[in-house]
Image (cartoon, rainbow, N blue to C red; front, top):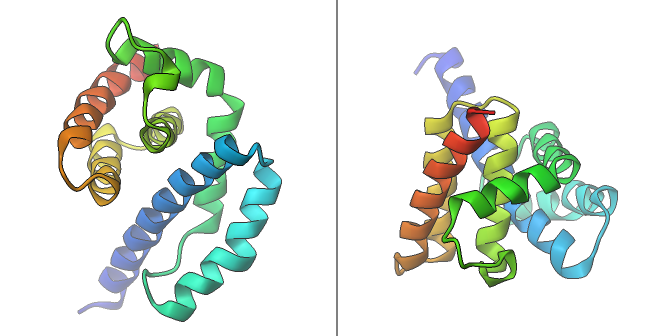
Length: 155
């Protein structure tokens, strides 16, 4: 395999790991009221090392990870408003599973930073499947992510 193909595949894997990290970090920020700086530092100093030591995933793109987190926090009000437009009318944000909220928020941040919608939807559906293997939440995620892309990209 060509060196440039390996590098491209490695970059794709690194971004996928970064997305998973972003979902985990956003969950932690909400659950523990942690600062972005503290969480980014934790992932950089501990999670990434632990991940690489146990060979669970390829390494992440920590710059991309940080960009997703910072974009989410900076635009959270707009992101949450668009999530609410993308779910059932009678649902409150608190009714959405916290992991799904983190998935929706991270995906919305990527729409804002202009990652192609097909990539965002595909990547975050895979993350949803890893957290919710029975499929019910994945169907919800698929519909919400699709509507969320339309909402955010039309503004």
